Length: 341
Image 1 (cartoon, one colour):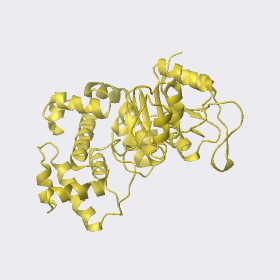
Image 2 (cartoon, one colour):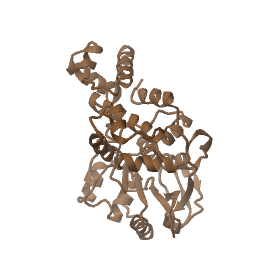
Image 3 (tube, helix red, strand yellow):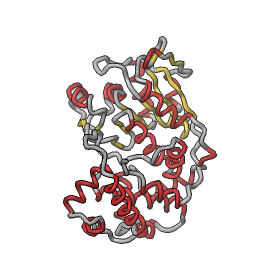
Image 4 (cartoon, one colour):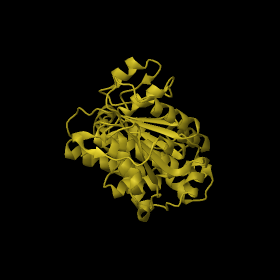
């Protein structure tokens, strides 16, 4: 059976938390074509026999069985009820088979324990919610568990930290497979900023930044985006913010959640995505407009952050009927991407 590139299977288990289960349902189950997003086909799949309930005893009816995984291009494992309980072998085998057939497998939070039980994470780096990270590492020593990041894109497998990070992982997947404009369209309809960078820390222990600091960094961010094609020195940005480099790095991370260097690189990648989607210019020219030294540097960062080459990204975006997002919307959105107020 051929896989439908827009068919997204969400595997639901009894007593799995409601929030994580609802995230892919909302991302992929709503028709947002008028906003420029693809029309996905959501397949709600029962991962086991018997009645399925979720948080608060709410009953869930999943109309599809595990055989639906054979035609899905993406299989999402949003959660699981108990790390110490092994998931049903029928579900594990169906997930393995879907992966072998070319499906991308995505997990959030306790869903990582389902994915780990398939053996598909052996020898890979993966993430779950920080609270469950030590348990995952102890139960599955062949997995390199990183509990400090929001999500990890390993190409054919994406693991997310869960809860709010599930949204980030889904939007990242949409951007990677169907274009940044499609991801931005969904984010706008959900009244949320575009996805956070996957390397951003899960835990947030600092207090809210002072409003004057937020305003100061907003000006610096706007300046950087406006001059994105130019070499931008972090020391110069610190001077523009009237701070020492050390204070700038520390306070910027406090506001944005990532370092100034990481944030700037993320902006360059986003600009390159927009140009690849909306222009016919050569890769080298786009690389320079996004502030990269050359096409080789751009390809390196695309492989690292998106798991695809710029050319493959362009071809995928062009094959999608999602339409484009206006440049002013994209730049404005990316400027607000990492501000926490």
